[in-house]
Image (cartoon, rainbow, N blue to C red; front, side):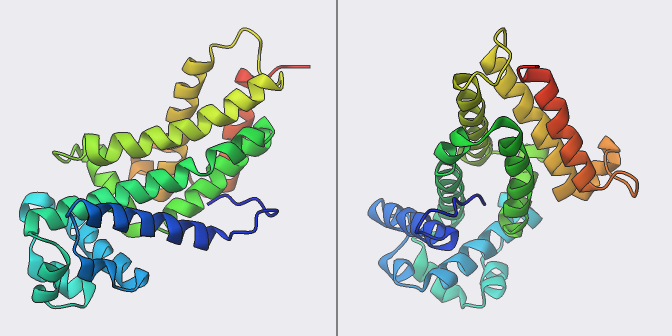
Length: 243
């Protein structure tokens, strides 16, 4: 998503390390098996993506292990070698997804705190949308859980990921406040919540086109780049210290 060019570690390496930490933590708690942990990380991701796709498409109550196996390109027997039981398969996939996403997002907060307000908002919107779009399986489940209220996932997926996004914005705005770039009378926490909600709407209209039918935000005359820049300008004018 966001990477400081002066950093030695690449974003891919950072995200692979975050993924591996999640796998090790789940193995230690008996949520995945040693067999799963020994798989190549790309195969692990393919299996988890297959579980997530199945939940997103059919809902947790209608999941079929056979369909998951077909999506992942493995046998049903292999799936039961990776996870102790069917319910554990779903729970582990969601927990792994949540842990990976929140760890990745939290790793960017210190960098966000160092960015100027306008640049930070641009980075948060543009690179955040690009990063989200690269995880189509997980985005599908998150969208279903967030907008349809899929039972059981508010506390295990939606709130944790939303909280990590909000922490990134809080780091950005706190850094801007400490540099004197925000209005001195600004209620910081309220501003964080409002900016968080506005940027979600703007980003999700782009990531989930069916929402744009409701928002009526994007069209040929108002492409994503124009809307993103207008959003940044609106926020800066609302909360930034004016000359």
